[in-house]
View (cartoon, rainbow over the protein chains, first blue to last red):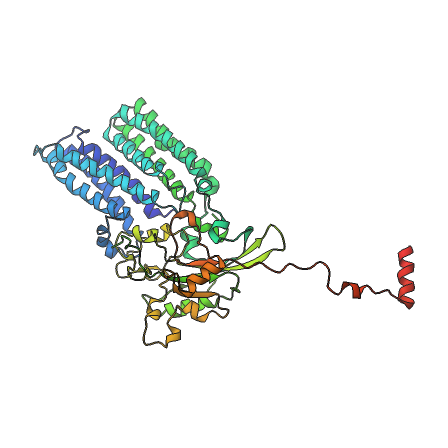
Length: 288
Length: 245
C-alpha cells in the first residue's frame, strides 16, 4: 500500500494527541491555571493537526461533513464522529482545569473513553479490510491503541507507567511484525484463486503499459528493501529509547527527549504499516 | 445509506467467457468511450500523449499464461471489472454514503456528488475494480452502463453495456443472474461458471466461464501407413550409403 504522508501524519499525531487527551481527561496530569492551558493546548494541537492533515488525503475535502453520516456501517465515519465528540466533550474539562471552574471529573472520564474509542476506530478502518491480509487482524487496532497509550503517558510525565507502556509497545510491535509476515500466506489467495484458472498461472501481459491508480495506490512496492532496518529503528525509537530515558532522566528534558524519540519511532512504524501491507489486487498483476 | 440493501431478486451482471475472449481490448475502448460522456464526470487521462501516460479505466484486460498439468501452455485473456458483489465491501466502508448498491437490480454505483475521494472503497475491493479519477478526485467504477440498459431512447439491441455490445467474439454476456431461467444463468450452469476470490466472502454477481478442453494433438498422422514411402533411384542409393557410414 502507498504510504501517503498525509495519512501517516494524521494517524501518528492524532493517535498521540487523543492518547494524551485521554490522560488529561482522566485527571492523570494534576495541573491548573496556565500550565493546564498549555498541556491541554498540546493535546488539542496534536489531535487537530492530525485531523487537518487527513483532509489533504481527500479528493474533495469540501464535502468532508458528509463523512459524519454513515456511522452505522463505516469505521471511517465512526472515527470522524468519535473524534469530534471526544474533542467537544473534553472542552469543558479543559476550560475547568484552566480557569479552575471545578466541573466534575466524570466529564473528563467520558471524554477519555471517547478519545480511546476514536483511536480504536482508526485501527478498525484498516483491520476491517480483508483485501489487505496484513491489516485484517485484531493486532491492528491493539497496535494503534498501544501507540496512543504509550504516547499519552510519556507526555503525561508519569515516568514509571510510561516506561512500562513503552516496553509493552516493544512487545506489541514485535508481535505485529511476526503475525503480519504470515498473514498473506494464511489468507491463502493466489493468482489461481484470483483468476480461477487451473494450472500454473503466470502473467503473460499487463492490461496497460503505463502507470495507473491501482499500481500507485495498492501495488506500491517501494522501500521494502530497508524494512528490516526500519523495524529496528521503529522498535528502538518508539519503545526502548523512551523507556530508558524516562527512567534515567526523570525531568522535563527527559520527557522532551522521550516524546521526540517516540514520535520519530511512531512515524517509522506507521510508514512500515503501509509500505509492508500487500493488497490482493497485486495478484492480478503478478506483484505484491 | 452505505448499508447493503436486502438481497434483490434481480441481480444484473456480466458473464465473461475466458475461452472465447481474444484479448482485443475492444471492450476497454468501448467502455472508456461510453463512460467518458455518460454517467458522472469524464474518465480523465493524465499525460496521454507524453512520456508516462496514465488514465482512469473501468475495465482492464489482463493476459495470463496457464500451464496445465498435461499438454502445452495456453494464453488466457482475462477482462477485469466490477463484479457487483452481493456482499460488496466497497459499499459498507464508505463514510459518506456515496458508494451504494441499488436495491432494485443490485448494481453498485457511486454518487459522485457525495464522494470525498478518500479512496477507502478502492482499498476494500479485492478486485481492483475502482479507480480514483485523478482530475475530479472522485471514485470511478463500472456502472453496468446503467444509462444504456434502461435507456428507451436507444434502439432495443443497444440496451446492454457498451462492453457487451461491442465484443466481436461474443465473449461477454449481460443479464439477470438472479433468475435461474435467464440465458446468462443457464450459460453459467452449463459451462461451470465460477466466482473470483470466492474465499473473501464478497459473493460476486458476475461469473467467469472457464476455458474449454483443447483437442489433444495426435502424435501420428492418420495417413501414416500411406506415408511409409521407400526412396528409390539415386535418393535410395544415397539413403542406404549414408545409413552405413
